Image 1 (cartoon, rainbow, N blue to C red):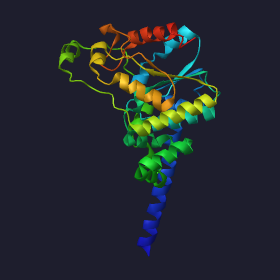
Image 2 (image 1 turned 180 degrees about the vertical axis):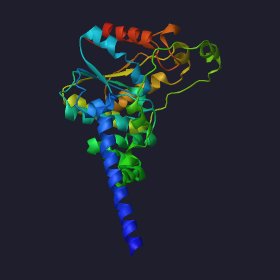
Image 3 (image 1 turned 60 degrees about the horizontal axis):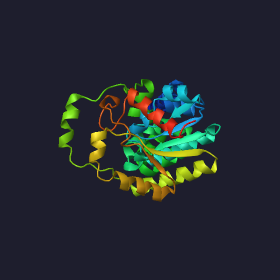
Image 4 (image 1 turned 45 degrees about the vertical axis):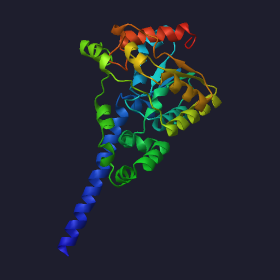
Length: 283
């Protein structure tokens, strides 16, 4: 009988420790300055909402705000899939006054990424939509987070919330410039399911009276010239959404404006934002 009491006490202590630890970590993540912590913590009100994968991080927000006089918030993340972005956009619009503009880099439709979605389990307690998405694509992770609250925080996303840095200000290396000749006809392949989520997000935002802008952010020009289906990809998005896609993939030609083949740096982002303003995409 004594063994039973010891086991019961151990189970209760483990359960209590898990729940207490979960409360502490939830408080830590909510106090973080990481963008999703700010969003779910009520500190992300903006006039311009920016959405994308790592290429969506190319919008240099301080310069965009300086040029337009409008505030910005960016929910982009490296390798983010569009189904996750849709949930984040809907959560954002449920919590804040609607932004005037919504910019989406359409290359966000290029992949499924259940692993990244599972990593957002640390924010699932703030959002029923996010919790449902995680359950749909990674049920074992979702169940694990319900059994153990500490388990929710076992992810890269939580680590980023503890310490986040965005190394955008770099210049493309000489090695990458030299190797461009060996790059063999890349393509940008979009996932039909992700296009459906993009179309649903566009429709939902437009119904809110938000000005939606679909873009393809710049690629390193010699690399963009080798992508054999860029125009077809743009047409594919326009068919799926019924909206014009503003293609800036080949708009910047200076190597100094890039960090690598697929990402502009701070200097390139300034050039890009100037182009957006010149074309009437920004006020």
